[in-house]
Image (cartoon, rainbow, N blue to C red; front, side, top):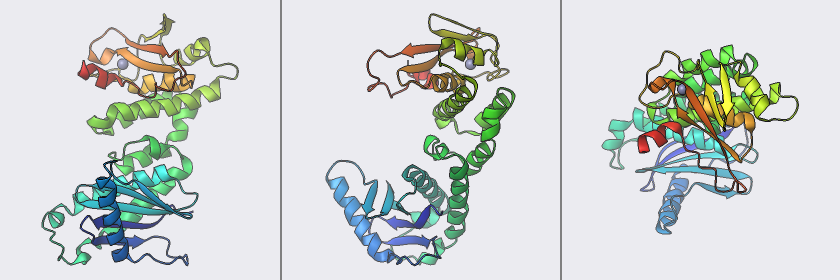
Amino acid sequence: MLMIDEFFILHRNGLSLFHIRLDEDSFAIELPAELFAGFSSAIVAFSSELGAGYLSKIVIEDQTFVFEVMEELITVAKISGDDDEAMAEHVVSLLYREFITDFHDELKHFDGTVRKDIFFSFAEKVRDITTKCEEIAKTNPTLLANIPASIDIDIIKQLSDFSNELVDDFPEATIRLTRRFQKEIPKNVMHITMFKLGKEVGKDVAKKRIKKKVNDKAIMKILKEISVSDCKDDKITLKICPFCRGRETEEFDCDFVAGFIEGAYNDPKIMVEEISCHAVGDKNCVFKIKRIENDGKNSHHHIFTGLSKSGS
Ligand SMILES: [Zn+2]
């Protein structure tokens, strides 16, 4: 199954800069790129006039157009029926970023009369990136939706290739791979990425290891495999945390562990936050379990450890 059928980069003035059709074998009618560019720029202008933010998708029958509007460009992927929208969004953001990096100078001097074949070389990158994304999606259907598009696709691919090890060879491989991966992530998205990754891994490890009811005791049993740990008053202490061992950081460093514990509980009423960390000079890494009393509807905003620390 091919995920993205067609891909466009359009200028907000209504010009098509780049267009590629990836499903060459199908008999679907190719969209006239210039017509589509005019239509898209009009509807993007219209949707921003409404004041409700930018257009994110258009659905026509069984075809979905996923949009990203940034600065002067409109980046669009066309997908069919069953394909994953979250994944397409990821690919669109990724390709937008690659495009402005590759053609920074051309775009700066673009006045609408430049020959479009200057962008032709982008086709190779589109094929490369969509292929990688499809491979990742095949083995890890939720990974791309969980990871910011600013992370290099090759790093995500590596992570995807090791995803079985992360869960099956817990805790040794989990610790080793997580430490390696964390170093590769841009600082601005590190906390959220590691938290989400931890949550996915924690969920899977708990599913595998806990045969009966998920409770504090069962989760502590898993955490004891990572480190000397105890739990008191909803505070979990890791006495020798192997995730941040040997690291000295300005901000709390163990987002993966916080996410891991939250994922292991797999309960929307339970959130976990790191409240002290060995990496910043605290004695131990301590994680607070927050049990939300309401139905959890207002609780999806997790406070990431690093963000809350720098914000206070
Ligand atoms: Zn820590």
